[in-house]
Image (tube, rainbow, N blue to C red; front, side, top):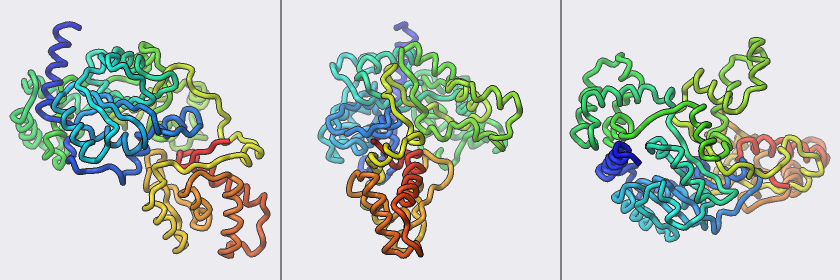
Length: 439
């Protein structure tokens, strides 16, 4: 590695030694944050790729660039029984990460002050790698991806992200301005943070660089200023560059983590009434081309947050929408682990008793764009899922019994009608991975 990159890495290390991130209080726990746990659960990524439910017990999970360990704690809570290994360039951050997990009673975790490129020295293979908010800081992102691939099990999955040059344009312009002012020479500290704050507050509100992203409330947080306006090593890229990096590392793109929020057709007033050119070309576009066009037309996302893995490891499966009746009758239904809490069960029970709709999406909103609610009597047939996985047949029987008890129907409903109604409910919830279906 050349001298310039070595100096850059040293400045990044010093930055995080001086200002560890994230600055989340030691005692704060993510145990009730269903959405955060959902996004960091290996079950979510594995099911999306293979349409199979995996047991996290005994799995080995890496938090690459663990910082002060908050995401390591999230990974531990989201993946019961898994071993958590955290690495970070900053020794001070690693110490805080160790303290955090010890405080919360997580025993099966270990941390190392280590560069991502040196991962092979650990002698470990991982089922899941979480490299959150770190890849864009590396002088050579492909080398980082290659290092992670070298310690990934054949069917393992990597969740990582890169900054969007378009989605973060305002911040990058601000960084350039503060570089020109000499505030990012070496490793910025408290003095530079205060100068940024004073400069931004002195600008008129309509000035583009201020209007594009400055937040007076967030500005009281020194960490927020540091990882945005004074972020040493920060850089953005385009979707084609992301895919080029994956090809360079011999990794296969699986999906954006918030896949539903990258749907190109949602950008048009009427997806069924597109101009002729688009109507003919978009159906033929590759995943890369569709994501690139989305980012150009609507740079909504700061991050390209995605799952990837070794090529050709996705297991063959028949989409739920194409299941035969026989496959449905053999189906086993799982509630997503992050919905299987006593509080959510209590909320569902209250909705059933009060005959109000159960808004399941309020616990995990990221897979959808609008609220997802289930009519209370229909939602009642899902209640057994809080005790464990159920067969499709048993849920149909549950629905027949509930309908009879609650007087939902004036006339008896046939088993086939109940089967179709339950199938429709399960299909609708599987799309968002609120329910996981196997046959």
